[in-house]
Amino acid sequence: MIRQIILDTETTGLEADSHRVIEIGCIEIVNRRPTGNRYHQYLNPDREVDAGAVAVHGLSTKFLADKPRFNDIVDDLLSFLKGAELIIHNASFDVGFLNAEFRRSGENYGQVSDHCGVLDTLSLARKLHPGQKNSLDALCKRYDVDNSHRDLHGALLDAEILLDVYLRMTGGQGALILGAQDGDGGPVGAIRRLSPSRERLPVLAATEQELAAHEARLTAIDKASAGKTLWRQTANIGVEKG
Image (cartoon, rainbow, N blue to C red):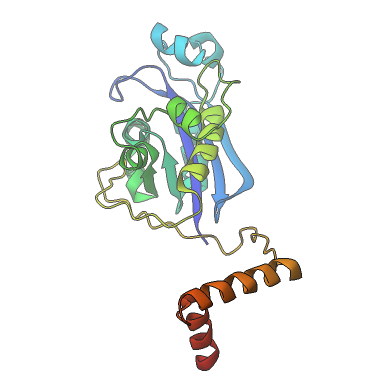
């Protein structure tokens, strides 16, 4: 079972040492399928939200005043995250803020890498699309993901969008990303395999008319090549081995 969590945060500003996490949005997927389990929380940062940050996500100091503090929810959050691989766009930002919040909550909480693996979709996108724009908005456009309802950033909304982008970007197929790093600077083990529980592709059998046309074409090729039709030679080998 491959358990992953799409995660995004919103913050009061850009520097993790002096600013705080004010929203966390998480969506659980198992074997690349959403389970319906989510974690979403607004947080009181005990400081003013920078005007520039409010312009991005719309979360004001007044709105957050009656919300719980990070220390109040840290145990529930870790219970939800523990043991999963976190899928984050620009993971160094979110992981840096979460690590700072864990430090403020107490030494026993450690850091993100003590509880989870991390896959950075920004690093992945840069390897898949070098030299191109790889913001979340750019990836939405590239992979035809509808983000027209995204007037402002929001942790849960952005996690929902990233879920669609990640599934389309990885395509359900194996991808070995050599040298990729997670949000804590560690290597990302990014071998992706098709899920055994995925929907099976339909198999369409040829009609009798199509088979007859195929056989006629092979006969013509066989005649023109003096019996050297590779298709029939391969088919005969398969029959002999079977």
